[in-house]
Length: 402
Image (cartoon, helix red, strand yellow):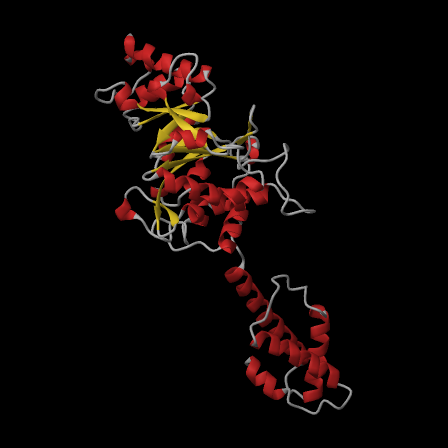
């Protein structure tokens, strides 16, 4: 007998002693018909199974059923148990701990061909990332042209990168992210792909129960729970017209700076925070150098730095150079740093030592990929290069964690 037939059978006079029981069970039937069943725990209904059975037994007697009451009870139990089991199997959410970060973030507006990301999606993804990234230790990996990854930002974070790169252009009154002007999309902005997601993650990592708008203090926590004081570098490569780009960039960074999320200078020292903004490309160095309460830093030219003291070291965070221009020639085969000899090794070593003496972190771009370029990676690791430029995040993670 269907729930509809049973409902019709229950259209009886409820004025007698069995009236309350009839009404009570009728409400249970309506609940199933309206698809408003909420709990997989079959003992969590208001009256429980025992009360429902009592109601059913009373109703069967009241309606003069020709079938034994016990068979009705058994049939009702089996049907209800089957429905409850199916509901649990269909609607039970998969445990986040058993899901890959790529699965969680592979749909929606952060993909390469995506639409704008609403604030509520940032909050959800921040919550999910917070749960699945527990125990993930950061590695010195720089995600080159990160916006070209399957899921910008999150693909780099899921392997533990401490640096990501975004090329920005001024267009239509906003900062758009892309490698060329022809690839720009008004829905793929610096805020939607990077600033808003990072802010959402850090709000989750640094809750302020008493004052949600309060700025972070020295007890701040960064992106990675396994190393809460590791800063994430967002390298912004200004592709054109720094005089228009920098003011717009500072305006978009202002909310993060106000909340204490950005590494900044107090005039005498650098105060590290969860995010460090480094500007590269066509950035106006003088404009950064003369910033008051600087929270954007420069990417100094590694191969042009003067020994012991260089004006461009002030206001800089990275010192970068093209590996191919530093050591021109074909990529070397797999192997250790022994494949390099003489002047080449000394040239790399001097550049790294000079940058470190100026308090700067070293990065080479145009590095050969893995595994063919392992010899180069081994040399740079041996010479204490600070961050490794890569387009292949999985290969870099395997090498840096190996």
